[in-house]
Image (cartoon, rainbow, N blue to C red; front, side, top):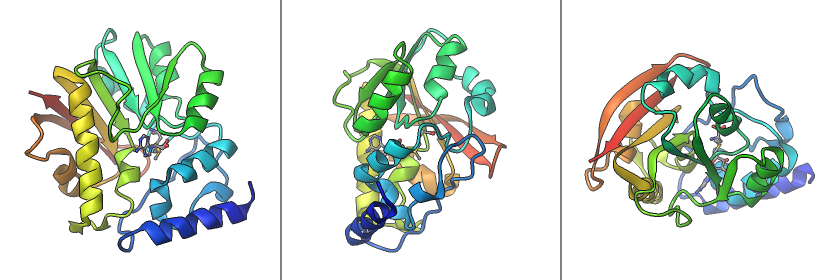
Length: 236
Ligand SMILES: C[S@@+](CC[C@H](N)C(=O)[O-])C[C@H]1O[C@@H](n2cnc3c(N)ncnc32)[C@H](O)[C@@H]1O
């Protein structure tokens, strides 16, 4: 695809967005083969499935926010090697393969982009890869997982929130749907882990909606790159 396709996607994002983007998506990353050609001008483009499909036809590998090595220690405090783990919005991150290599026995990676799931399952055929939208996770059963991990996926959903002090209703609804789906597929006392760029003050209103029966049990600051936030939330 040529640049004009990305320009078209930017136009689609502009038409769909409800207000001016207030979020900053960080693409600072050393471990990448992303070229400037695949970076959208407008952050709202990150919400489009078509954008991700386009990007994944060009890009083989990109690690958002932090690598497995950066978070290995903190993950091991909350996840057992025998846990059944779902990675949502996995993209072409090496997280799933690296966790498996490090002894995690049951890791399933999912993303709504058919392109990336096809690419990753060809590159890592021994891993499980599933096309699934994080807003419903309908390919998975109730109570199936001990752990669900989101690394920078909700970050893509909040890119058109408008003002982070007063996010638009569409973003609030999208994040609520995502949390409901995560809650549904978790076992009782299962853990939702999230790594995000978004300041906890703003992120908590999305992930700790009182209508969802879970509670925050831990938080870590991850001091890599720009500095990120790691939440541990447990289903009651
Ligand atoms: C910022 S990237 C993060 C990728 C990867 N988790 C990482 O840390 O490198 C966001 C990912 O979320 C996926 N995504 C966005 N919206 C999604 C949705 N509604 N359902 C499933 N995946 C989604 C995109 O395809 C993309 O792979």
